[in-house]
Image (tube, rainbow, N blue to C red; front, side):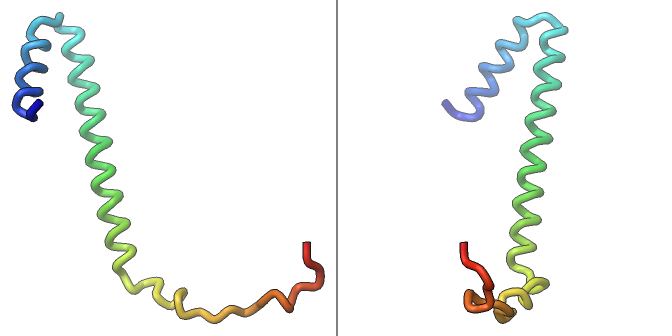
Length: 74
């Protein structure tokens, strides 16, 4: 079903519900929208951080220790 079809069907269903139930659905829709916006924001932050050169120095860091430095192996 298309987005417009789903919206139309949802509006028809909402028109048959009592006012209290409509408020519950409106609150839930607000919650879902907020969660969706937060996910978009989080992905944007992750993209900016991954494309940034801020932590590039960590990739070039040499290993200070290796396996031969261990006193005991488990």
